[in-house]
Length: 98
Image: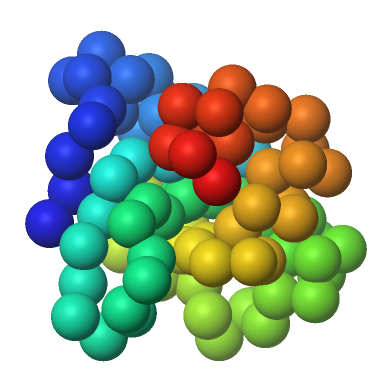
């Protein structure tokens, strides 16, 4: 279940992904499969070569990409925070208490 984002934020993320740009969106998220995780960061890009290259720098495997209309990696836990730090997304870290 996703919550804690505005429709405008989601639409902007989708537009950026569709343009073939790396787009980063964090939202609250609860899933029983991942206890202790209260948010997820979605890093998307419709150009799979760009998305795979971006993922390689963080040792993300290409087969972890969710292949749908908006291809993306899901990040959570320690890896989520570390990548957000390296990407300079401090407002995501603060907003979601990471």
